[in-house]
Each structure stands twice: as structure tokens, then as C-alpha cells.
Image (cartoon, helix red, strand yellow):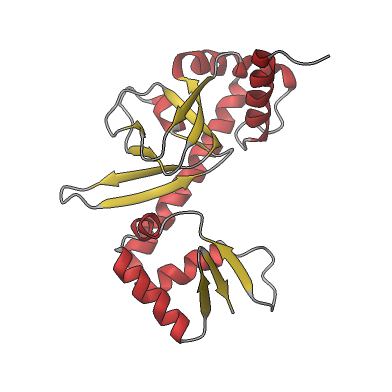
Length: 224
């Protein structure tokens, strides 16, 4: 029996939640309950999901596309905190505060996200304290990302930052053969993530290329 369009959309939402680390392993009944109040939102490339200080509506799960979460300093310089991709969740910390979102969030390509509304989910947490523990684990993971970013920006030079980024994105396990790494973000976004400019990133890539550490083919870096 074929599914109705609404049933099909709901099944896709349930599958996205089931694949997200935050909800992985939850009983089907819980997934269905959460999916029943989730709201799907589509953004065009460059469109903002929220801006720093906006009232929190809840947290999000990326269904397709990518969301660039960043801060902008007084001089207008953008610092990328993280690029969230499919089945990653973000902004969970706003569930526990009355303040707004602590950063800006912008789609880097046509993107669909699932909004998990704050009030509905908090009501569920009151009935399911085990979910609250999952939320703490997710927020701890985000904190580790931010601490690692702070460490990179304050303690490491540009060559070390780029080398660390390449190492993090190498397939596991790293073998002796050359490795191909797809650049899933623009050079400008990658540079902002590393706290530098596109020009400095290009110079560092060129330096690594001249030293025979890597080759660049379009949007692919080949580590040799």
C-alpha cells in the first residue's frame, strides 16, 4: 500500500531523527512522538536560520545541506564555530536558558532543517529524564569542538591549523597510500573556520603543495 505524501514526509522526518546521534537508539514510539511536533524548514543558499540574540524557538537537526554557525566581531570579521551537516544537531543549549541564540546560523547551500520546538521538547524531557542525559552528552560534544577551536586559534600557527584540519578529515584508518579529502565548504568558509583570510589559506595550501605534502584538484585535496 502506497504512502500518502504526508505519511511519506513524516517517515523521512522519523528516519532523520533516528539517524541523529542525539536520538540514536530511542524506541520507535519516542521517535514518532518527537516527529509529531517537529517543524521542517527550508532555506536558500545564504539565508539566515537565526541571528545572534534572536529568541530561541528550539534546536535543529540538519536534514540536507549545511548550516554555518558563526560569530561576527565588532570589526565585522566572521569566525566560524562549526559547519553542521546532515543528521547533526545544534543549538540544544538554548533549551536550558531564557536567552536567545548565542551565534548566527546561515545556510551555505540550499538546506532543510528540522526544528525541534523548545516547549514541546522540554515537556517531553520532564517525562523522560534519560533524554535529558542525552542532551548533556550532545552539549558536551559541542563544548569540546569549541575548546578545540579556541586552542587552534590561540596556540597554533596557520600551518599547524591546516595540518590538523586535514588530519581530522582524513579517512580512518589513515594508510600509507595517498588520501583524497573533499572540500565540502568554500575556501572563504574554511578560512573563517581557521580564523584566517582566504588569501592566507591559499598561501598556506600553496606552501604545502610546493613542499610536496599535497595536491589540489578542484574541490579535492590529495594528501601525498
